[in-house]
Length: 183
Image 1 (tube, rainbow, N blue to C red):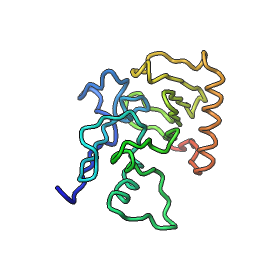
Image 2: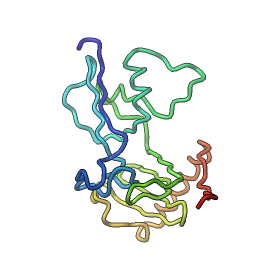
Image 3: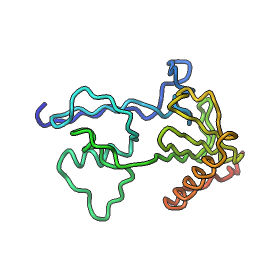
Image 4: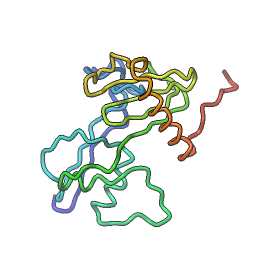
């Protein structure tokens, strides 16, 4: 216990019809919170005990955090998608990030899934549907279940978030949605 770190998380929310993700909307494989919001638990010798945080984190943060906790640098040529959570885990420092991005340009077999790109900035979450170009906007602070779609009421915010999402896709070289010739 003096030199071991344990990380617990999940890749998706609970499986449809087998779990209840309430109050979150939807399930595993979905772009709604029931599909992407999962526990992330770190335990180890230098980590604060028994904290719950509302800081934004994503699975991409696990690798740089483990490197940092182990006292290992990333290699100069190594690309890291996430940020280290070590400062937050050890002394409560804010995580150095303003937004999170997701890009899923294809279909899967899960209910309530479609090709999307998403951005989460603070309390706001914008979902851009790649096939139709439609958007949905949610205030996760007041509507964790994503029941009140706000894009028509916040056009300036939608424009800002879509612009930021497009810039992120260009910067990262995110693959566009392409037609499948077999269907």
